[in-house]
Length: 154
Image 1: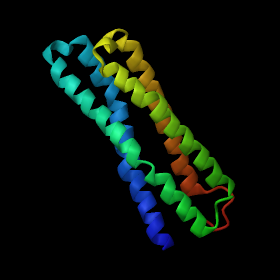
Image 2: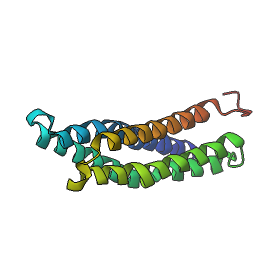
Image 3: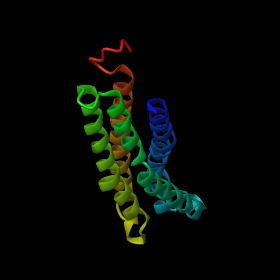
Image 4: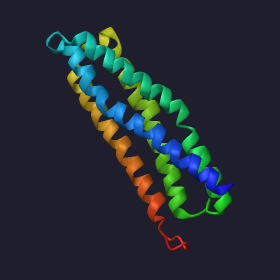
């Protein structure tokens, strides 16, 4: 059962967090180009930005599976009180908060017709927030692999 839980956890992390990271990273570019007209490609850029926003929004909902299966796996392994896992959970919660409270709403505002004013600064802010989101996930991945203080020798 532990192997199944761990497999689902890792697959969900790859198949859910990966697309969010890519879509959120690409969004500012297309939204900014759409706002500026992009040399006749404004409609295409607007469509790409809207699609990237839908990916972020939809995958954020499904992303709940990552910590759920991670906690279930940690419980089966008896490591729920280990520092590396607790830090990973806190960083996961921070990443989720950045996504749900800042990135997705920021994308939505940029897609609104009135959101074209200040597109450059909004895009820069979204790029920075996406970088923070991606760094938090990178740290979580390293903690999952290295597991400081683990007695398993991994």
